Image (cartoon, rainbow, N blue to C red; front, side, top):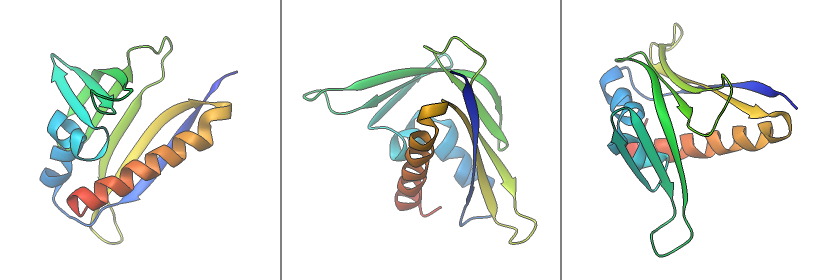
Amino acid sequence: MGKQKISIEYPLNTKSPNIVWEQISSAHGFERWMADHVTEDNGVFTFTWGEPWTEQDIRKAQLIELVKYDHIKLQWEEEDDDSYWEMRIEKSDLTHNLNLLITDFAEDDDADGLRILWESNLERLHRASGL
């Protein structure tokens, strides 16, 4: 089975890349909307879902590329192919607000689940930050 590329465009309620950048490029920002606990050490982000007294899911992502106020690209450490996940900030020509463009990869039978997970995370981003 191969992986398919998933692209999601999420409109944001801001024109300020500074606000968006803080949410998508730092451990503190990720912790507000993507995972319960996030740390970063030398370009390796550790995402933890669940509390210490419960069952936890822990995944590490290596920072591949970062262009401030433009995009961040990471790869889960356990991936052994060229797949990655990326968040890119782009300005809408229509509204002049910003859009967050998500690119990720999923096994063919997991694509719908991954899309639902991203949509849920983006809803948490909106609730946590108003974006």
